[in-house]
Image (cartoon, rainbow, N blue to C red; front, side, top):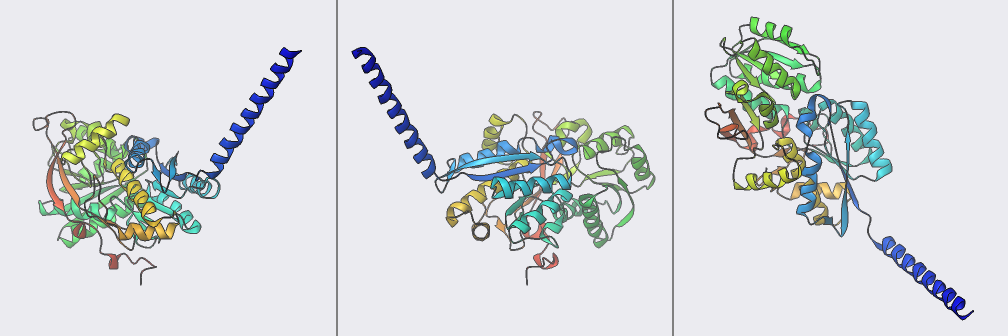
Length: 407
């Protein structure tokens, strides 16, 4: 009997201790602040899949760089593939804001998706920091008090790459253009640059997104006799167009290709023998200086591939957002955006950058030329720097964007 009573007593004590521990844990969890939820959405598959891999890892690097917490709150990452479809992107954004409590979305490549998500973010009064879409409408007719355009846009690409090609004698152009908002915007902006410099646009042809066969389009471009064939597309569309242009002997025949939106990952897919001599614009390159090389080493420990301005842009936008939340003392969208505009942007890709009132981030842009195999020291040594273009020259003046909420 005594043994049984002692056993029972021990069981009661253990149960009581267990209940007390559970109660203490529940109380601690109730007192712990809820995590700050942020998200990255992009076309992680399909035509832009190779470009966007590593954005989640880049976001995590930014979280690591603020110590993993903001205002005593842990930071939780959400991610999703919008499949380059505006309806899917809008549905994901709506769920994140309404159900999951996400406070900020970055990434958002593909202009049609970016514009759809921008509408949802405006409707909900939430923050979207676009790093991947090109359309300059994001700081023009579709601008937002709680939105930003972080990395590049069609205006900057057209003026830096297009302007350089015209100055080098490329005064007649034919455009091979992706048939959606981004491609049209990029062609239009570049055509303005060409014409303003006294050049001529001899024609254009639109191709479907994710097309595999560029032969008929390239034959039209070749037949135009234009000095420059402007590729107003991106991702695998650009890669396939350049490869097939090489098969047609277009560059050997004397015409030049202008990659109006290209990335380091594209060049590695093409290889230097095919891509050598291409002129392009980026806002980040891993081998610019000691800081970019050190950051790339950290990034590659998480994702073993060369970072591009897309992955660096997700890091930069996330880091500046988290710093602004800390400085504002709140995650309220308008208060955070006010701090983001007030604080200079300083990180691995941007020095003393400025988030303008219309949402445009003003930073230097870089004009690169792809090295020849003989010039390259290793597989990652792909660019030589031709020019650094200050942000106030690279981006559209705010008054010309006609952002509706700016007086």
